[in-house]
Structures are given as C-alpha cells and as structure tokens.
Image 1: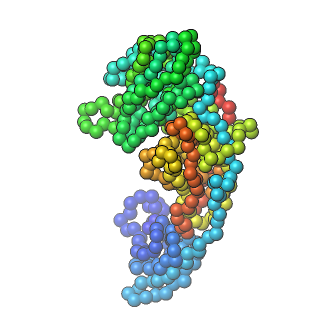
Image 2: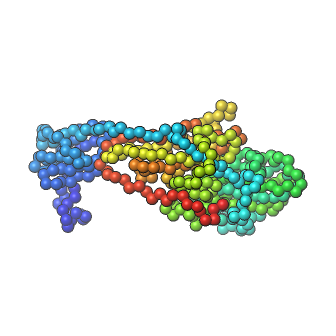
Image 3: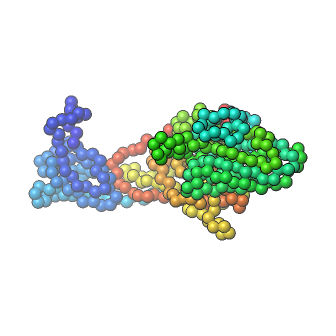
Length: 432
C-alpha cells in the first residue's frame, strides 16, 4: 500500500497492507480515511473478500469509484459483490466497408522508370559470405535491412536466352516471385523451414535487340539468430546469392535494388525503422492515414486479384467503444484455399493507422488473429486500415474473409488510453 509523504516513493519499515481477494485483476489499493479504494478489472460479476488489513472494519468500500455494499463475515472477513455490467457496442463489418485499391507492383510495367533506384554495383561486400555474382546483390550492403526487397536486372536480348536460374535467401518462411518484363515466370512460395531456394524458370521467346528487365520480389523475414556460439549465422545475407542467364554472361545483366524508402535513413521516425519495406505503396507512404485515394479504383481484398502481383487496399471506419472497459480487438484473416490447387499462396501485411501490426502468409500460417491494442486503434474516432496482398501464384489470390473482433470484454479501472502519434500521409520527397 502507498505510504504518506515523504516516504511514499521509498521503502519504509512500516508499510500498510491489505489482503483482498477480488476477481480478474486487482490494480491498486489505497485508504482514504476509513474507506478502502480499489481499482481493478472484472470480466463477470465477482465476489470480493477483504481478508485483512481494512481499517475499522472497512465501513466503506469502493471499486473503480463505485461504492460496493459489504457485510461482515466470520473472523472479521468483509464480503461484497462487484456487479459486471456488459456494455453494448458495435464493430464494423470490414467486408461491407468501401475499400480503395492500387497496383503495388508497377515495376513490371513496360514503361516503369527505375532511374531513381540505387544501383546494385558494389563489387565487394563486407559480408563474410563471398560473392558469386559480379556485383553484390546483398540487400544490407545497400542499407536495406527489413521488409520486402525488389531487384530489377536489365539486359538486351540476343535471342538465345532460354532459362533463368536464381538462388535467393530471405530467412525461414520467406517467398520470392520472378517476372520478366510483365510476364510472370514463377515463385518460391516458401515453407516453414527453407532459408534459401534455388529455382530455374523458362523464359518466353526474346528477340535480338529487345530490352528486357527481370523484376524480383523477395520477402525479407529478418536476420537469423546464432544457434551456436561462435557461428556467423546472423550474418547470412538477404537477397540474391547467385543467378544464371543461360547463354549469357552474368555481367550482361545490370542490377538495381530497393527496399524501404531511404534504407537506413528511413522516413518515418515516429513508427520506426522496422515498420515498412520496399513495396511501391510502402515507399510512397500509402500505408499512412489519408493517402491520395481520389483516383484509386474501388475494390475489396476479399475480391482479390486474378494474376500474380501485389495489390494494396485501404479503408476507414469509426469506433465508439464505451469508457470504463478494456475491450481488446483483433483483425482476423480467414485461411483461403483454391478450388483447383489446394492452398492459395499469398502474403499480406496489415497496417493500422500507419503502424504495421500483422504479417500473414496463407500457405504457411498458422497465425490468423492479429491483436491491435487501444492507442494504435482509436477507440473513439476515425481509424485507417491498409492491406497489401502479394499473390505468388499465376491465378492470383484473395483474402477469403476479413473481420474485426473483440477477444474479451473487461470492466476496468485502468483509465483512458492516449492515442499514439499518427502522422498522416504527405507526399514523400524523392519517392519512386
């Protein structure tokens, strides 16, 4: 129990104390005159017992500022009942909301301009793994350490190119998609144990002198941890380890790379360096509240996209939850399947008021429920939600069902929660 000043913030040899048995969670206890003031949480109507320490038989008991009727029992135990009042509240049906959509993989379009991208032209690396390519294609060598990575490899065709082999590394559970110009060549959809993958894809017919660009989308799942003392597993690079364009030299391809805008000089100092990666919508800042959606198409993530690629969706909704309650909320992404080929392979990232709060990999899982705390969600006003949808299969993908649910309803004395800083979208200088 708190003591009086000047000892209230320090250890005292004569602390006051009270023994209380009371429900889900007891937060604080204090005396005001002959009244015992308690704050805490209950999730149902709850019996309370003051077993010892109450002054003068505790003629007055308050729980979360409400007076509790009490009775004296055997051995001086004081008993009472704290009544749980279940509140009425509504949560939005996310499927029924108006969603806006934009293509977040414009890099595969023929007229895409990558002139502002960093050149992947370093001929050496500080990484202990030696290079198997003319220039480093390790993302961290260029300051990209988190989130999705994109590579573009440009060459001029001679007409003899037939296949493209590529070895990538992204960490356990990662995935990668390969495009040539706007043609989807294939994906490694990932599994729970694969840290790297070597794949070979057939190329469409190319003509002499035809400009061609590979676009590689790679999901960086974070750096490894050292499983054994003295190993360098944590230094395993993320990116392209090796590649072969059959019939051509490696040096015939010139590469560019990007991740999050600015790399280690990241733009969002409020939400931090791990909040966003290299998808087009992320680089533009469209995951932040109030992006310029005026000319975006109306489409829902539950409708999805019909081909391989990356879609980006946004919506808004209001919440008005009752005061005096702790009501944890979570987004639920229902596992999706394809009628023709079993599990649909896609990856989705969830942004809530600009904060990334979920990464869902449909063909791996198992997490489908993503809690978002009050303060990130505005329980008493407008909220902005964004979803990326990366379809790794030629038939595209969709999110089967998306819900916002409450995982508990708790009558609480913890008080008001301040909303976290939520800087809104502004046009980013130098975004590409």
